[in-house]
Length: 187
Image (tube, rainbow, N blue to C red; front, top):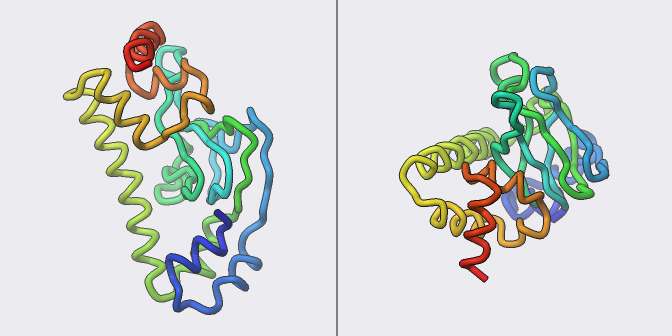
């Protein structure tokens, strides 16, 4: 969905949104494999995904671990940089050709957060990301691998066609072999 339509659906009474989107955001198409933000680097870019898929990851003992997937209609950006003025803990990688609307957080803050309801929207978006991370962490400790797989398929229905199986396995906290067994049981 285009950002203007997303904002119109979310804030139907705000008439100046089209102009603010044009002023503040730039549409960019990133090819598969592009890195938007590298771990341990600093960026205050904020992205709205109109089409495509982005993965956040980190290294653990030189193993590439998937933290989260961001899909169409998601906002994403390095929260460590934006809110804590610290380098990003995560690398943001484009998994398929992805169209984003991109802005610097300061521009977003200046132009949008003064609007009615926008600060609450920002807080809810950040809290949703935090809750998803918390739910994932709790699920890793309390749910079976099959339950985590089912939850992932519910949230990202076509993820198996869009991301590498190694990325999916690390997101689920299982080995690629366990993922193959689960996929075999499910098919």
